[in-house]
Length: 267
Image 1 (cartoon, helix red, strand yellow):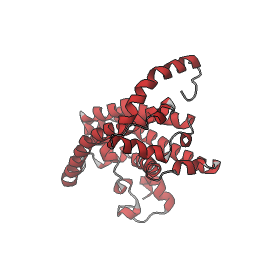
Image 2 (tube, rainbow, N blue to C red):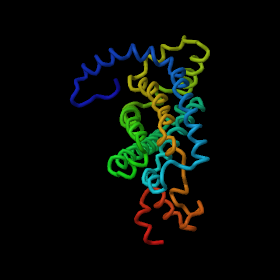
Image 3 (cartoon, rainbow, N blue to C red):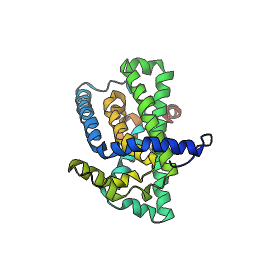
C-alpha cells in the first residue's frame, strides 16, 4: 500500500493490502460495465430534470442558487473531468507529463487545485444546508439525499483520490495503453491482460473502481446535477447582461469567486 500512516504499523498496512488485493483484482476488470450501468439510469434522470427546469425554471430561488454557487463547484468538477478525459483520450500523455519535473509539477498542481476547488464546493453546500434554514426549506426532503450523497460517497471518494495522488507517481503506474485497454478488454470480453492490474498500488485500484461510480452519483442528485451546470447569470458578470453592466476582469473574478456580497453596496 502506498504511503504509511503514522499511527498504523506498516505490517498492519501490509496485511490489509494482502487482504483486499484479491477482491480489487477481481473487480477492476469489470469497472467499465459497472460504470455504464451506474451512469445510464442517472443520465436519463438528469435529462428529465433538464427538461423540467427548461420549461418551469430552476427549483432554487436566485438567492439560494447564488449561495450554493459561491464556490463554483462546476469549475472543479468540469476541470477534473477534462483532465481525466485528456489523459484517457491521448495515449502516452501520462508519460509526457512524467518526462520532466516541470511538466509533472504542472499536472500535479493543476489537478490538486481542481480537486481542492471541488472539495470547497462540497463543503460550501454542506455548510449552507446546515446553517441556512432558507436553503433547507428550498431544497426540501430531497436536500437530505443531496447531503447524504456528498457526505457518504463524494467526499470519501475525493479523499481517496487526493491521498492516492499525493502518494503515487501516477504516470509510472497508469499509462495511456492501460486506460484504453481496460475498456477495450471489457467490451471485447478479453481478460488476458489483467496481470498488469495486480501490480498497481491499492489506492490506484480503489480510484479506478470508486472514481467512475462516485461520479455517477452526480446524476442521481437533483442539486448536484443543477450545480455542475455553469450559470454565469447567477455569478452576475457583466457579459451576462446583468445589472452590473460592463465590469473589469478583477471585479468579474471577485464576483465569480464568491465575494459579491461585499460588492453590492458599491453599485
